[in-house]
Figure (tube, rainbow, N blue to C red):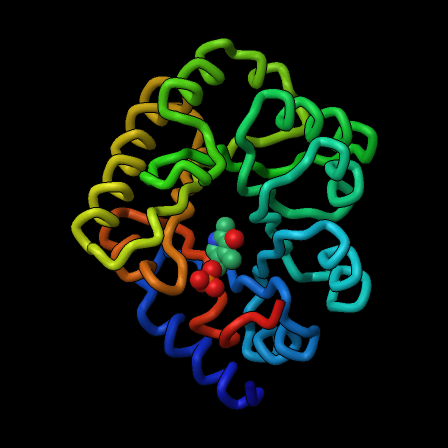
Length: 225
Ligand SMILES: *Cc1c(COP(=O)(O)O)cnc(C)c1O
């Protein structure tokens, strides 16, 4: 991919985002030069899904990048990313939340997190069911965690071409957001993010009240694994 293409793609995506919708540029498997190109165009939020790859990129690249961890995070990897991560998007258990809080305390940091919801039909997808998410919030342990900040919800739709199904899945997530917002975060202005929408479905996600889209391929091209 040519750097001119990356710059053009980035602006094409940004131009379609309504005010209030943030772009997380998903740079996993892409080289530093691609990230630097997007950075020169003003992009500051990047998403990665592997701890070691992220560590190398964080070392090499400008320190005002806000890194989002978007992948499935094992508890034993938390300590490596907590010193510098801006947001951990895919928290899918109380155990993981507690570990982030514990490690963040050691660094006197407050790490922003999203709870990952499972709305897709596919059985392989990670994430909390609505009921598990309700149970986690209802139990209330999170209220005592001073080093994590719950900022909203994240989800992925099924990998299908059926727009109706994708709309239905994102809408369920958006309605669920309203439910938990009013029940647990009414007074908490920081709980506001709805992270949904990837290259294939971010225009649909925006219609379904997304505040944060995670777009990789549409900007950087196909990943080479
Ligand atoms: C890889 C990934 C993305 C970006 O996917 P694209 O189809 O390349 O836009 C978004 N969210 C998550 C959780 C991912 O793992």
